[in-house]
Length: 375
Image (cartoon, rainbow, N blue to C red; front, side, top):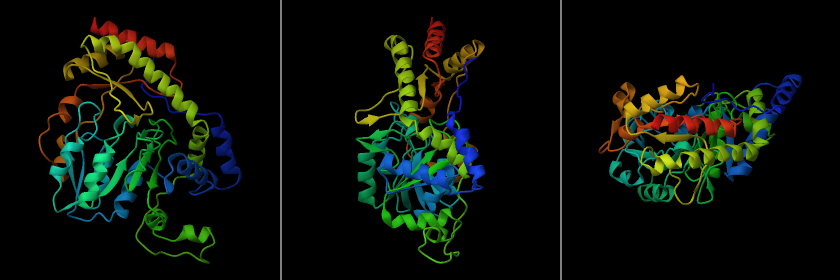
């Protein structure tokens, strides 16, 4: 059996977790939380990184910092995880869904501007599969219309757009360290903050609305409740698990890229024969091999392929149901323009096994099984 996903694990993780326990410091913002924040800041060159309990919470935190209010509208792709929309629906805003590009499955930057109204407050590009959206265009639109940009870079750690780390280009970026991501802490995420002016507010909101962070730095002699907030701090044991992977981040990234390239090379003959479509990486984008997917002819062929692989011990899955077709999406949001690609392309996409530790010979076997299906 080849699983679809195996959470990453590094042997030093248990040593670091035991250290947390021995030091009697297992709550948030301990040694390993700070190490992870520091690593993220140095790696991404963002002004401030704050580890959170999930990417969902990082996005919620960004929504609060952006002062999203009831009646506001937030533009995003319909092809994304529910958390992208939930973070803004919780603030009383309306998600306005826009069609995607068929090549990258990212929001179609050419269709954003027509979705803007006097109620629009923010744009939320989602970097699908760790491949960047067309951020130059998106930032230009945001600047001209005075909009906030919150990057959903849940899948984007180690990816770049024209040399800039994903999540650092807009006002805020949200990363995920869920067990299905390239680097994991089980459940977890991080907020990336571009501008100095937002750092103190972010620390306060993340720390239950208190100025506790300033107290721990010795800037004040006692802390108190100063603003609204919640508890977005992960356990330091979770951070310790994550940090063990960040220490070998390049090794993990390179192994995933090797397997991604191996998939592509093996399956290129099916692409050239017109049987399937393979992922597209636009110029200027460096991706992180978060996933490898193929596109079948239609939903029937995809379902048959997934079943064929499962019968042979290979777990493959489809991905998101477009949000504008979901009950909550219909209730809370609206789709702007025509759904030319979102539904059609989502129904064709099948994700193949991809994780740290997947063996090259397993990639070869998966590809041979796919070729067998298409014979």
